Length: 479
Image (cartoon, rainbow, N blue to C red; front, side, top):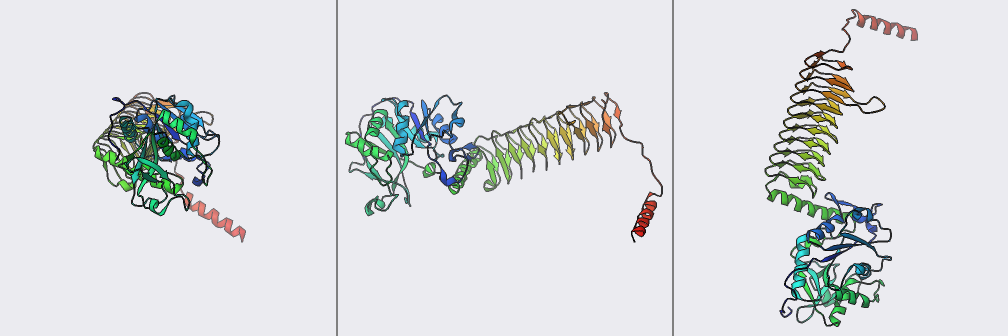
């Protein structure tokens, strides 16, 4: 190991983080750019961006390809600069594209965008370690039981890093070098001046004719500067994504980390292997997530609530002590002590207030359901405002579309609709009102009134006999 030396600084400066994102990602076999593929609720690129922000980066520079396919993702992120690598000429050339945004006195961290599991803690730690060491460059390494395919880290006699030997082609490394189990992760920390100077000296005299970032390390040593290693504790952080198999493998690791985080915080996940939870989901203590449940986007679950089994929630706010069983909900609010399902479909704009219920085979869209109100089963409620403690009978329908526009229905508090009631919007039902079974309500029902809108029943005697006789006569004629 290198001899100890006095730290160059006593405080830690915010780094500049350069994210290499110009690769074409052709092995994904997709019209969607690789780094925009979703990973547990975020595009792949959003993961290293979040880590860089969490590490307190002074500036983030994303190196894109000439097509600028990543521009839309970072367009509204003021601290992020987008630069272009004009030709795919290797990782050192990609870092050169970021040089206009790097000052001599900057601490520069370079990471690969397709290794999304890197954490803010690791970026902070390598930045801190680098600055306190006083050296020109720090290479993050890891020791693997099977280092196949990775560049090997060759150490100098004093323990500093001498070079990285690539192993892509036969003959790149000697037999002795191939036995080295310490590998390069592609994560670096540099002094800005040392990096800029070394990039000017990098050559492309290799089989691929490209400029490789590891080649700056021996150049820095030739300039009588030192390169040290920082060993990562968790190799999973550097798992890369080049194809959909690797995307699935990284997703599995990320999902396990997300589930572990929630369980350690007091959430019961009955079967983590059968549960999908996106990275930005929040879950309160003592909540229960039952098997085959998927929680996506910015969904939040209050303490004591039970979600699932077989439920999918996307961008849903769930209060405390609620229950959502075998149902689907998107962009809506479920209040405290609300009961949902089974087989409910809750669509955007819906609010279920405290103690309300959306029961079996109920669909609700863009509606405000008051506290304590029950929509027990077999109903469609669209574009409606419903008061408190109302009960809607089975097969209550709000006919909200007249062929030209959506119209709203207003239902007061403590209303009771009987089974098979259709409310043709725009229409209003007052507080404490009732509707008769089988009614099609087209006019307002006043407060406390009973709305009856159906034909008087007529029984036709002998109808079945006459029907049979007519059928027999028609059959005789055909013969």
